[in-house]
Image 1 (tube, rainbow, N blue to C red):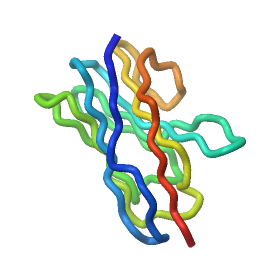
Image 2: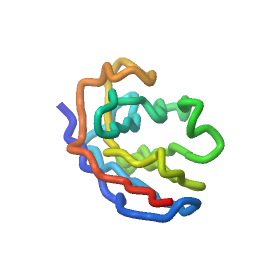
Image 3: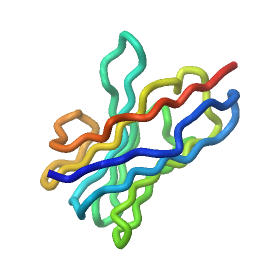
Image 4: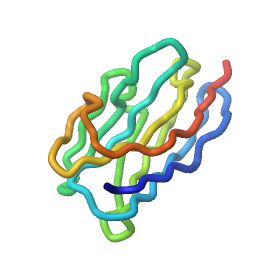
Length: 118
């Protein structure tokens, strides 16, 4: 099972930017970002295949960009124009077979907090 370690979270004011990174211990077909706010279900934010095919949830499209460095086994999420409703714990996920925004991934990171203040 792949090990995933997120970094880059923190606190920012609305309208600001953050970049999340996720280091994977080995190559996987698909990597994705999920988030979970207190009292809410885990939500798929964006996913990317090894071929670079991406999917985004509608609330972040145009503001967030997912990318990956295959050689470094690293996933990124560039978050711009952040809003208070983006506040959540963000999780990196990886799968050998599946690539979508439902949480059917076999490997998960420990999560990293992103807080956006108004």
